[in-house]
Image (cartoon, rainbow, N blue to C red):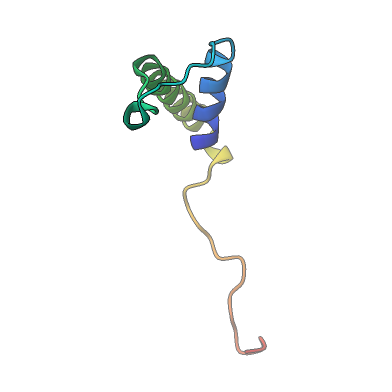
Length: 75
């Protein structure tokens, strides 16, 4: 989910001009970028829910054991 959200943010902000704050305490504060991150997270969440609803086999929720120990199995 993190990777998908980051990809949406990258695509939507690719043409933004690079800006740097002169204040070291507020260098990472950018309200427009925060809005883009929230928007990208909502899009990613909607896509994931849509995939789960339409194709539940893509992301199985039930875990089944692949290997079971029996009396003939090595320890």
